[in-house]
Image (cartoon, rainbow, N blue to C red):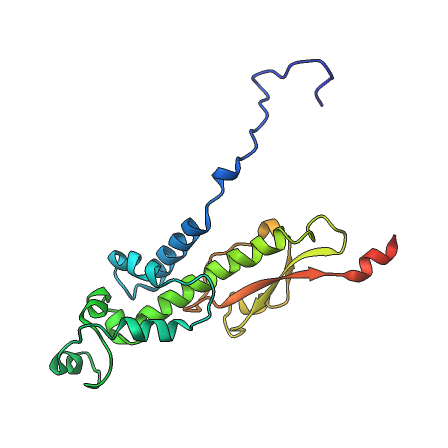
Length: 201
């Protein structure tokens, strides 16, 4: 411990606290989420990053399926081109959406963009949930036990066993877990609050 009145030497520097500007903004988190989804799923080309970002909504008031259906309603492929990728002639697949697709994405061209946007949206929603918990006033209160995993796909061998498990807030990640096989990584966090803890006062 440093004694009062003595200067700290260069051999034991004090880390500078991170300024608020050092934390990524919500816009940066969105871009990171989109980039991760494109890379992990391999369904659309990296050049389509800005396209997916432009379709991103802060709130899931409109399901990505509807958003992407509208996107695919632009200038349509010909009937022959649609047939070549296994689609009915009346299915919506615009030339722009088609050009976004990788070979893997062409295996299910009506779902590729949706999967990417859903995965990125769940990542961003985890970010928002953690931000909300941090600003809620719960952190630091003895009733706050941490954050609890809320897993939708309990069949996944990686994230399924975590359902209901509580971890410290600073250990919570917004990005899909390593080894997770869920295409959209559709899990979240909620605060774990033990109101009985306050009765010990």
